[in-house]
Amino acid sequence: MYTVYQYPLSMLFNGHVAVCGFFIISGFLITRSYAASKSIKEYFIKRCRRLLPAYCLLILLCAAGLVFFSSLPAREYFTSPALYKYIVANLCFLNFAHTGLPGVFGANSMGFGEDKRIFEINGSLWTIRIEVFFYILVPLIVFALTKLKTRKRINIALAAAYIFGFFYAEFWEIITQNLNSGRILHGIKEASGYIAYFATGIFCLINFEWIKKHQKYFIAPALIIVVLEYIFTFNTLLEFLLPAALGATIIFVAFNFPRLQNVGKYDDYSYGIYIFHGPLLKIFIALGYYNSSKYAVILIAMGTVFSMAYMSWHFIEKKALRR
Image (cartoon, rainbow, N blue to C red; front, side, top):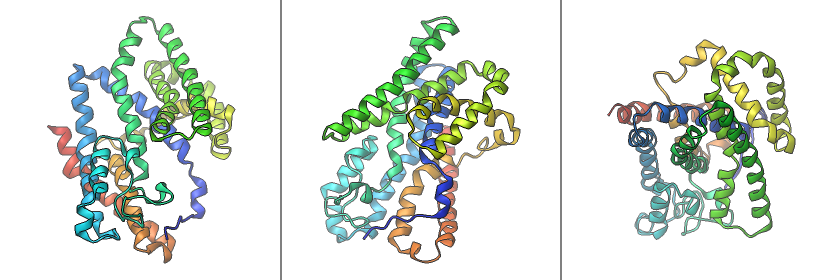
C-alpha cells in the first residue's frame, strides 16, 4: 500500500507560496524574453528549446523505465493502451488526462487506483501546462499593452488583470466545488488561480526601476503579508494581497543580494530538479527506503535528484539552448 511520509521539516515549507512565486518570476522573465526576441518565431523557438528536450526525455524515460515498478508482466505493460495514452497525453502537456502508468506504484491495469493522485507518476507537472498556456498568451498580452501607449494605462490594465484573476479564480473554485467537475474544468481552475501572479510579474518588469527606488517603503508590510500567508495559508484577504506582496519581496531579495544574482547564471539546474524529482522520490518510496532512516534517505534522494538535474543540464538542456 502506498504511504504518505511526513517529516518535521515539512512545516518550514509552503508549496503554495513557492508555486505562486514561480509564476511571478515567470511573468517577469518570460515577458522580458519575448521583448528581447526579434520575432514571435524566435521567441517560441527559444521557449521550445528550453522546455521540450528534457521534458520529452523525462516522459519517455518514465514510460520505458518504470516497467520495473509495474505489477504487470513486461509484455502486458508494453501492450497496454494505458501506456500509450500516458505518453501522448503527457507529451501534449495534457497530463491531467492520464497521470498514471499501468500497474506502476500499485495502480491497477489501467494505470489508476481509487485515488488517482496516489498513482500519478509526476504530480508536479501540472504547473507546466499552465506555464505553456502563459507562453502562448504573452505575445497577445504584450500586443494589447503596447496599444495602451502610456505606462499609467498599462498599469491600470495590469491592476484590472490582477483583480480579475483573483475573482475569476474564486469563481472557478465555487464551480468545481459545487459540480461534479471533470479534469478539464479542474485544469481551467488551476490556470485561473495564477493570472494575478503572472500579471504581477509583468508589472514588476514594466515598473522595475520605480519598485527598486521605492522598495524601502513597502518591503516591511510585504514581508509581513508573506509570512502571515506562510502561517495562515488560503486566508481570503491574504490571498488577495499575496501577489503584490510576494512580487515586492522577490524583487527585493533578487536585486539587493548580489551573490544571489549569480545563482543559475551559468549552470541552471532548477528545471531538471523540478521535472525529475517527482518520479525519483516515488521510486524511493516504492523501494521501501523511507522505512529506514528517513533523514539519511532525504540526503540520498536529494543527491540523486541533483545528479539527474546536473546531467540533464549539461547533456541535454545546455546543448539545446546553444543550437
